[in-house]
Length: 536
Image (cartoon, rainbow, N blue to C red; front, side):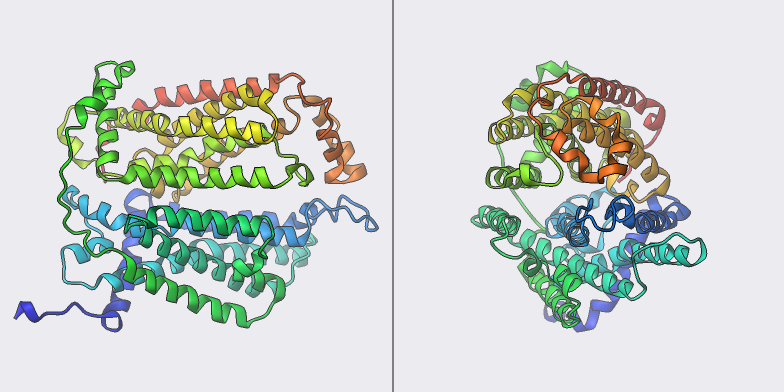
């Protein structure tokens, strides 16, 4: 009898589910990009790792500073801290897949289904499904990110033997780095997964989870709690106690297994009633005219509100900014090796737009629009408008409060210009290169190369100019100062009071160029995406 049927449990179906999810990940990637483009992604990552390995002596200042000098650009401890901090932040951002089960179920009418949503329509165990998904994520990122990185490091060591390019790394350090980064990656994914599972329950958890995340982050940032104790992979990197990953990795998988039990199992059917929303939203958008753009923007805003996705997106955008704001209030940035100021943060607010734009495009399947008189470029422009309507006011408030905290209210107008210019540029570039699926297109090497070239150059330019408040004369003798005093030689110059308040022509010039490029990218959307069909 079907009434007596029980879904297969973890021991019976885990390996089958895991293998199928791994194949599904590859299918999704190949569906967007050519096989060779995907294969080139780890190759390019290995090449980048090789270049950084060769440049380690320059990063640590060993080549630029005399051997009897205590000054270095970066210490080894700092490099280890940044490496694990970056991997941990990345894994936290990629582990919130407890949210997407309901989204995938709502998109199954688009013609494609996903294994993560199968328990909603088939008698499969939800716990097994989510735990297998976590295991797939860990394995996939280890193979796509960490293993190529280690191969690049090994190539850097080989260059020392065959090309005479010295590097301070040793062969014995490679397995330690791989195991340490794997520990950090699995922990970040597990914590993010269990947090998103609790958050998806709603109610009090909607407030408790962000508060816990901010509190723990501040405890580590303020060194009240040793950050190495919060991230065991980092602790292993410093201590080389081999029992740490042997204990920490199983604990991470245990946390993921617990999180799989916490995911709400009622996502298959949701019947809700809401008052009429479209007309009120439409009436609040007269500045968009009466055409297709206004229609699509109103439709997206209504979808965001009805699906409760808007709350998750706002939290994902606001929590990092709130943490940064609290950190600026409690920590003296003047004591940092790099002289951060208000203009240093403004470019990164625009860079955050990539993640938010990805959320907007992953919210709903656009396949149904193939039957409507709408072109793909019109949808992409509507997504960009929605992005600015939702995030701009948050960024403005953040910059205003940060200017008060840093006592740099005079720099607020220039910071706002930089933020808006970089936001227009980044989101327009993302739409032009990646279209409706940026979360998959980023793994296409032919797209990724142009994206990183197009983002890193202006971001680095604005970041460097921000240190001098627009006074470019400081960089005229950069090479001579570095060769004589090391990479920290400019710190005393950059924090001088007479630098503040000088001309901002460099910043305004770069910002104007970014705005012009952003508008040009928007005009090029028709050429690149005008004849493309809407695809999930």
